[in-house]
Length: 316
Ligand code: CP
Ligand code: NVA
Image (cartoon, rainbow, N blue to C red):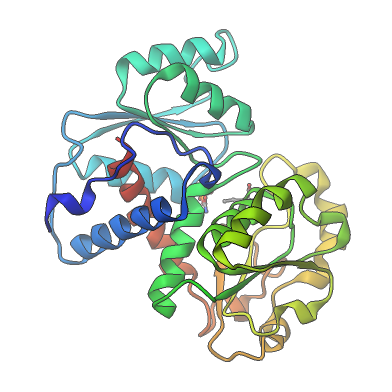
């Protein structure tokens, strides 16, 4: 495949949230991901990260994100360095600004998974190299691109689709999905209890994107919101760092579980089920739905790797 397919007009930028990217730019990332995936299916090998290094900072656990970054970068000849907070002086003995400046002298890029969006912003500001947000309390942008790729592969198109996210409407995945859907013209619904409706701030950010793209944003605690959905999406009820809220959340979210009854309420037999994973079967989703015919979660997980490779190719 020709090299120009991978030339993105945004080399050197960071990906902290999709708010900073135009719909055209997001579609360029998607196109690169489609090409990267086709190459992988074709058993092509490339060394596009030869001589490059990436620091992978993880304050929180990860299976998919870490493995995607590490394998996608390494198999292209790059050297990923995994750094948990047990290993580095990030915000402990040393300020984040200082760690950022030092990493910026040694690496080609940084991936950060942690608690604070502020910290990923500081890393980007002070390191002088591209920083990729691998999940914070507020956003999970690399996940959102994999989800969009999964929708595109399933339906062949994005504009005009309807995706309904069920469960904790305030979390990082819900927020990032709202951003990417509103930018790309995908109708976006949240089915959650009022207590977990998304903040007005994120709705105000997304509204102008939706007006421009033609997407609708709807938020409701009434199950009829799933009617006509092409995709039903859920995530864990208790995100990393919120373990103390387990009892309260489980009670609050039980009626918002994705089960076959909810899937049937879409009145769309072709609706798919999505989950960023890891999943707690029996809580946010029943085993029959996640293991069933409508589930695309394993494709979605695989797409993390292709889209993360695409993001790194585009930015580094
Ligand atoms: N979806 C996701 O980010 O998975 P991990 O927490 O395993 O990285
Ligand atoms: N909302 C979840 C996503 C995990 C990928 C969390 O933050 O734990």
